[in-house]
Length: 307
Image (tube, rainbow, N blue to C red; front, top):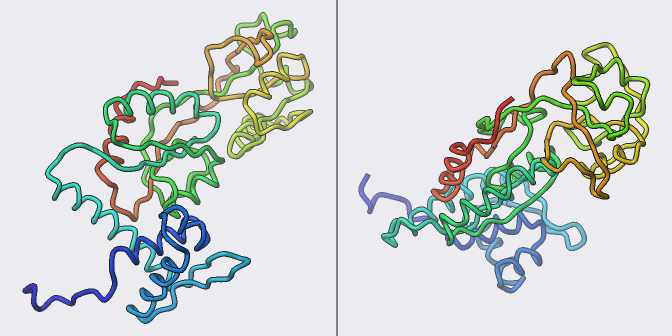
């Protein structure tokens, strides 16, 4: 098809970018602030886009933000791909191989101390013009962020990860028992769950950690006695060190003491439980910019440890 025969779009990249920003932020005002434009200019651009394609893309309500229509959801998915390709074209026209631009890295909180320091320091040093930002959240929240385009790549456990994501496994670790140093089982080489089931469990209550811990017991026909629930990894370790119970965790830290400085011991579970994999995930339905591809390749090349 000749250039003359092609249909010239009645909309602009700016209109698409304004729509995507409004969807990601959730409000016209918030998106306008992010883009440093007036709310009226952003709202007008979306209205002009709707007029150009003759579709209502969103419902704008002052007290409830912005809600996409079915047509809007379809258009936003296309718009993200178009904007990603436009970004790549801009870099190619610039004639430089230097990677630049933003990458939002999502991370499950207990993985953050393992994953983020190496990425931010080592990858950041290699590519100083790439703007790395962090979002820590539970895996269900990160999955929503990936689908909505708010996060470019996320590091999660391989449990409860939606099928509609691209993924690569980085490492796998078995769960272990965390005990106070003066616990009756602290001198054993390994610990059996049957020896713990009548003690108090300090449960890391953040999906999918809580589901995994309970499934480890359920696989042996056991039901743990949960004394306290917390969404904080360090609170689990602190309460355990205080003698309030034991913990079942996957992520490991080299520090043998709690946040308060009290000693802890880590013991393998006998019989061993299946390792839990750490996955890196990203959206399958959008082009991956060169900077994000570079981050994915960098992470795959690191030695994260093995089961």
